[in-house]
Image (cartoon, rainbow, N blue to C red):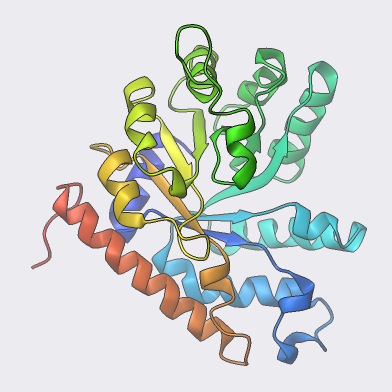
Length: 280
């Protein structure tokens, strides 16, 4: 998917919502426990209920890998089913890979050519040669970890060099030399708030994948105020607050309602920023 296609889909759906497909087997509704593949049934139900309100889905690989080979089969079947039934939706494999040379090439081949996702998250700690292999597949995206919202993010990401530049700023400044804004995005946690201003000064045109809105307490209003661009430039991810909106048999309906509420809030911001037309 190209950058322009993603922008057009955001305008069409009046949404920049990305939904995390993170199915914890312990949290699945009891009504699914007798299904041949409860996780796949859960994913399909969530997608059917929310597809009209989002532009992207982000399955976190850990929730599938923890189930062994059957879990990875479910992941591949989820992606395949999404591609067949909702081909306009952007699919992000949240894998946080990061290795060099031949290993990185095989990771890229796995996600982009075998599993056929649109994007994969990558850790940039090992430098350019750990990222470049992911940038050699036209039509696919690399999403680099930049400034995360976890407690330990300050251990390294906020450290300053002798010039007063924070490590995450160095990562942004250096890595933008490796690819363009039509093939690279950056992960920036929603709880970082005003630091989005600093990020936009370095990468004004790149898309940001912003987790942490919802259950983690990030503010959508702050993300928009400090991070939005004339083309939106945001994919805001929400996982638990949507997919686990209910643990009863109405789980899909509840997820749809939660996604719709977030989409409506996003639409109001898109109108306020004149990215989409005012409602008639």
